[in-house]
Image 1: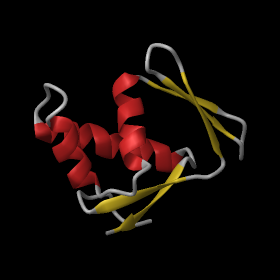
Image 2: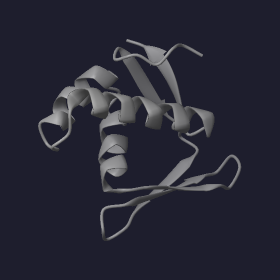
Image 3: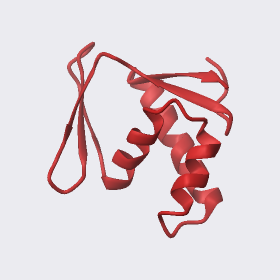
Amino acid sequence: MPEITPNTIVLLSEDVLVQELPDGELVLLSLADENYFGLDEMGGRCWAELASATPIGDIVDRLSGEYEVEPGTLKKDIMDLVQHLVDAGLASVEDA
């Protein structure tokens, strides 16, 4: 698996059902192993950005303008989220 960097593009698995809840959270169901995963509102916003096949660095730039968070913290959080998604089989990564 390629290292996750700001140039990484995330490919979301097609074997995931996504349901948005009224409070902005997302519930993900992996069809491969029938496990559920939850994302809070910020995680759901990241999921939407990741779905656009945009490099992580560009997503950090975009979201840092929307949320009051240090870009370095946001980058780490998004990269951690991506690693979790990959580990759970919900996504794969490739270099841009």
